[in-house]
Length: 149
Image (cartoon, rainbow, N blue to C red; front, side):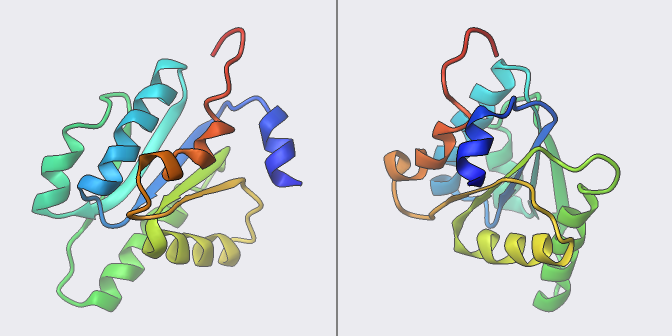
């Protein structure tokens, strides 16, 4: 199974986080997750909307995280296409070693893009509004203690 294989796989490469929308609830999980991974030297990218709220909240993310800001669009369809394109662009060249999607919207959009790319990258899903304890469950694979990061 992917979960079992990924638990044994050395997590090197890049983790891509898809956080749509970035709000306090998502940040409650995303900030400590990105910090923990950054302390272990994990390269990360976060895809999010480039709006006033997201800009204010992303300041609380670890400095080592590369933020991919998708410009706001007046047309919602164009907005979602822009997010999908930005997310898909992160698979050009060397694909990420894992994808973590936060909330229903990010999961639906991310899975659609991954299906279109025919990607088999390990996926982690965190529910929106489920609380930190429930949402951290998928990170157990990434946060397992090892002799070294």
